[in-house]
Image (cartoon, rainbow, N blue to C red; front, side, top):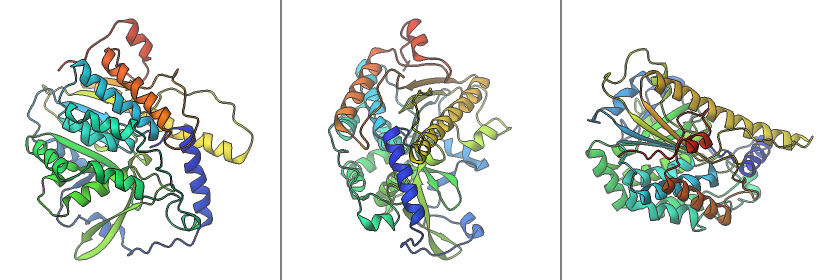
Length: 392
């Protein structure tokens, strides 16, 4: 989910505009909750699972190691440049491990496939987040956007994804999936108000001629801020009936996926006692609140309230995940943007800001002064103890 103040302003503006546009033009085939519960993606029966599904732990089967290494990448809009740069700097330091599991939501979904494939794709992350390719993302749809499903054209986002997610990249992801590694991307199903977790390696390795298209559509959905970009309709089938689910930005329900909801609530052990995962979480944003004198008008109040909600929900998710991990003796390493780093002042995806943030992330990753143990521990305290280099 986008946590930046300028983009939050755009989201609130979009919601206000769309609330006036009661006559939406998209036609959908109606379906029931019962049909929804039976729905599968044709040709990809096991491509996605719901975050609240008690059987979700089966998705981690096949990871044969006593210390799985996981990377969780959050949303953050333009602040995704931090995570991209951080990974590149971590590679340069020579201490970046191979991740057994990678998860991504929203901007994190744009990073996740390349983080999953390894340091050889760091240059792709630089091109995506620090070369100006996102500068013209927000192209206004015109008057039709006010009465449709998104204020801005989806074409630039769709083209960026297609440029870097091609057939060879898909096959590389499939090969890693067959080796036992897992890549998950998060979307939000608006109809059911549930978090969908997509098994991208399973999609890539399916052999279906539709695999590349579905892979790209899931990435587009995960990064489609509701009201800003149109939702992505994904075809499904239930008991012979065909219809489409409506998916949007994964950050609406899960801005960062460290531990899925069903696992957080599980009373039974999900892993053998001797399996102790090591989790790295990169937050493309800041952890703490920041002061800003709010102007006494409806729009400014709505913008501030929305940004506060996103920040608070993300922090609460991290706190719940931290308590879960701590109780089980697992290891959590968290990186976030320092509070001292200035916020973006221009709306959208300013190239100068993103280049600077990429380089800041790069230096953080390269320095070894990278991690904090919990959401309540400032990075400065970690630095005061001296650098702690992530083990291989």
